[in-house]
Length: 417
Image 1 (tube, helix red, strand yellow):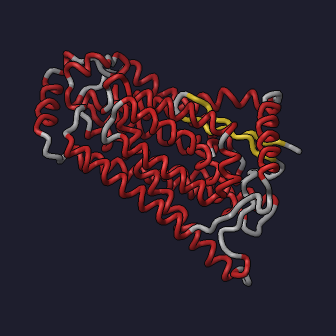
Image 2 (cartoon, one colour; image 1 turned 45 degrees about the vertical axis):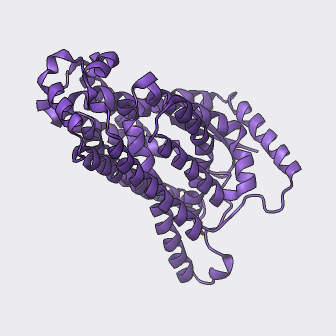
Image 3 (cartoon, one colour; image 1 turned 90 degrees about the horizontal axis):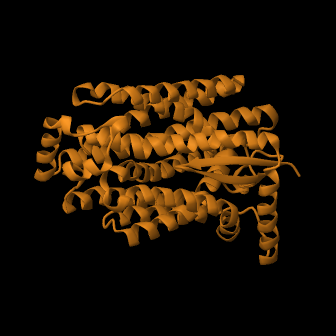
């Protein structure tokens, strides 16, 4: 049987998903609506639109909370670098889960409850940020990372099934590209609303210490090394604006926790429970899981697969740089913590818009020019970051840089799925 190896990189790790061919996804033998209801194309279209709308809305809620919290990690939790390390732990556990945990999880829980459990893992991680101690954050990161791989596998399965419908051949492939474009557009728009919430809460919170130290940081700009010359130790000593009041943290993370809970409820109420294995036994699970792992490592013998690995790690490091390094060394240390959310809104806007454009243009089979464009945008932004020292009077440059990263992200996202 042919094998298709999909790469889902994040942070500084590459997460490997081995999916059976010849179909695009192994986990797509699901129907979102009951077959008895599909008695006509009209009913099918209505049901498909209903499930698509609520499915996208539910998972946008997850993106709303998790990514907004991720963007703040490297700027808020500087003590013992718990913010950096928690993101790395999530990525490492996700990579491990892809090989050894995702297959049994989907076997036992099905697609619907895999998504629900993963969202509970996200909820645990977000809640841990209220009390960001090493022992709690690291444990929450492990739980979040282990379920994250299953989350993305189940998401891809649902989107693929929604897109294919009754279409086959080239028409189905075009439909997949279109639906993934729509999906990532709505999914990435969560960046907009999540970052907007973090900006409003942090900007207008009653935190006098935050406002005073932010003014001190801007006035004494010559004392701080920013951008490519960013020094974290210096930031910790002179920039207390990264420390938010407990009341502000409760409000901020309370909002994100509430949104995640809404997302969980929507998934439970809206999506049908579907499984790949309806009558399989535990013995079948063991055999299938062993086959899954073996075939994954066999795929590494493929020259084409090996040539894809650098691209996977490139995308992973790019995401890690945007969410961790760029937010702390270019935004937070120049304008203060609240501006992380404001400037990262641009990333959500550009990614959402260009996800639709890229998905629509995929029918013309112009992937290589897209990849070249994304690489040019990334390299150009990195060169600017290397030679440019950020100052408060040139905030617009940060918006341009993150917009370039957002366009590249819209091109990379379909590769991740």
